Length: 146
Image (cartoon, rainbow, N blue to C red; front, side, top):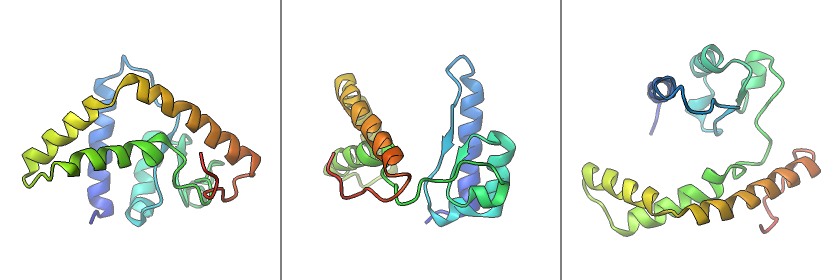
């Protein structure tokens, strides 16, 4: 289980990595899921300090008054949610790692095994999901088969 303090530590690591890779394209938006530890005042203060108005997060609107709130009923909106995590989980846990080093190695192997072609195939689905979100005016559309 993750606490808001642990989540902030993870975010700090993300920020330091982002700063180290400044030659890479910048983040358009920072989007996080609806897990309870991600929705604390401490986390929102951190997000506001580092990302300001480019955050999409449940309840962030109430905290900051910014205009972008997490789309309701859309937890599987991003490619990581509807594709990547499931694909990695199947590959990684299929090998049944029992040690942290084995788990890390299995994750690296699984990530490297995803082909560019597969990633290209995932993107039209993402665009389709965004269109459905717009068409449904942000309402629930989980029952649509993509």
